[in-house]
Image 1 (cartoon, chains in turn brown, blue):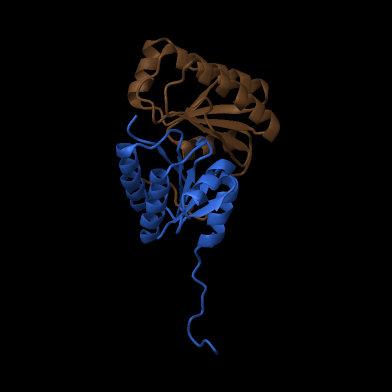
Image 2 (image 1 turned 45 degrees about the vertical axis):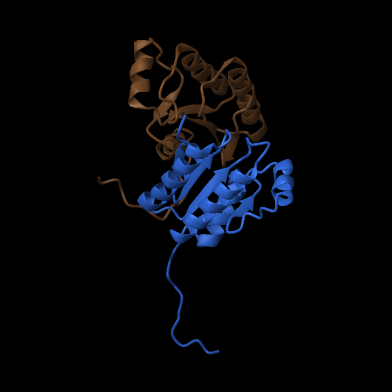
Length: 132
Length: 132
């Protein structure tokens, strides 16, 4: 596989990273994503990394790159689903993922994006507040 | 990787299949998905296969299985992003993906699901005096 699929969901793009990014895959992902932001006029990019149990500095840099590139295109980037071990590794590697927001899961990430781009969340009829 | 991540998006679950499913991965996906439907009370399952340029009869059967299982749990399954070549192969293999809906992309798939489950599940059916 040389391309990771980019899914469009309204104003946002969703990418699920399931395998380790090697060079070409990462480069393709960067360029595909930026082109997709341009083409779809997306306001946000969600990157789900819940399948990754490990990240290295390369992956950390790619995520940072994507965040910076998207920012220039006026889109916010949210990395979601990070496993605790991955968070530990990232900090230990000294990678702070600057310019990238994080959220626990896709739904929370989407809420965060909606807040940031100043849009009223779509009317969902389950308005139970999180009381758990 | 032995698990494909399942993302929750409101009432729906989203799975992006990016690599060929071998036995264990497929079995895990089936069981994870059904458990996720049960746990999250999802009403629909979206399976994105846009990254697959080829499917074999095994994959076709797995998709059919998921559709049937989800149906029993009262969730509809929509396969989205199928490449033209894949559609051709499926029909040539004699796999019709019974019990599974299809849509061109995630957004259209979500619209289809919303239509089918009737977005707001308000029970306004007057089942008393039907005059026919």
